[in-house]
Length: 415
Image 1: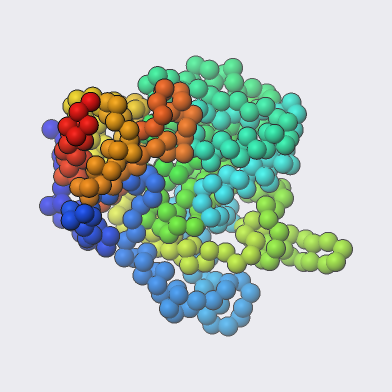
Image 2 (image 1 turned 30 degrees about the vertical axis):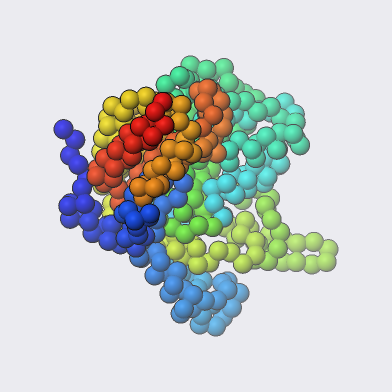
């Protein structure tokens, strides 16, 4: 019997009390929020950090010597330091603030990629990527003429590593892959994949959008050349993300955008770029959002990433077992031992949008669609899927409500 994370657990009850949105009712029912892979809810600590910035020291950063500007600059850079510490970056200067993981990948594609890719070169990605790690490379491929290759997935939803050796070769300049799939839940062997890239002289980019919020991720242990993630998936605000890069690579890369603060000197005859990390942070940045993300990091570290991972694993294992017993339900991806905190599925011939609508009538929020990962669905021969994804405030009781809601949907549509 799996130990159940229940609202009667003192730690879990305390955590849930820090998320005001969980007090909501939807259609007269208590909110059951199971769409955490899309975005997570925000604790009071993050909401208060945002509110305090705007109420007490709202100001632009790096450019003023007055008190408010200095306070804002200190808070912004302190957040960067805490984020760097979270992923064990050797220096805070290696952590670049972006709008999200998508923009972070685009920075690499259009800065490093334009300077280093051309005809005869190859970039390897996988069939389980989010669109944000597919489309930028497709756009760049059309413009620069390199070859884009895909490492396929197996029927069980894991990477087909038997084909890695043939696809990763001396022509490969970059291997970009997801750490944890946002559809399959598959946890990929990131350190091994990075090592395989390095063995042929290629760089490695890790999309950690679904791993950094849920488990301890050490960029130095992974030896990743680039790593990206989004703040809103880890209790932080929207509009803020991180690009981590090895210092020598970032220093050699040209700026992604031009404007204020990313320059050291501007003359009519030309300009000189600022040092890291500011070379990649043109214009007024998302100051409040960065400060909010710093507060989210503090919150998660206080919760404990080890506890969070164990909690989610227990929830996912329970959900996998319970959903497996729903007649007509097909779970997508590997078993619970190989997956992160989400379960995507189909139910008979019911469209996932219809499933989501029925569940919403009972206050249960899930995701429905292709989850910005159409190639996965094409590979598995389905148009769309439903997805329940868990986080630190979810409980076994909520999983039980999901199962009851799905059984209700099956009766309504009588497939």
